[in-house]
Length: 152
Image (cartoon, rainbow, N blue to C red; front, side):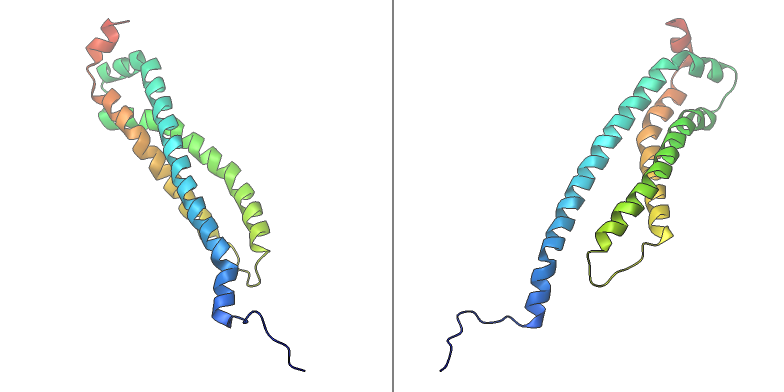
């Protein structure tokens, strides 16, 4: 007696591709939402920098009258935001390491997460924060100190 085969068994490459197709789609979707989250975070950081500059307008004016340079004022305003970003990186790295380790355990071929991944991510976050903040900081540093001191 001969059995009739209803489904052909696909070859190895097709099975391999089917297994990881969901991971590829997940990676693409994760990338889109990551860019969206970074954009929203940059808008929030920009608003926070704008608020901080408005609150410290008189202090910035006095510093400029006393001889502070544009670089010093920009560094003063950027320092507190970079400190916050560093604290966020310190909190996020262990959480990301834990979650990524759990996710990678599901795969047959495992890799180790290198320290350089976190350093690269942290430096990228700091650079993005500095770019976002620098616009407001430079505007505050080049503004006329007389206007800020006269208005108060």
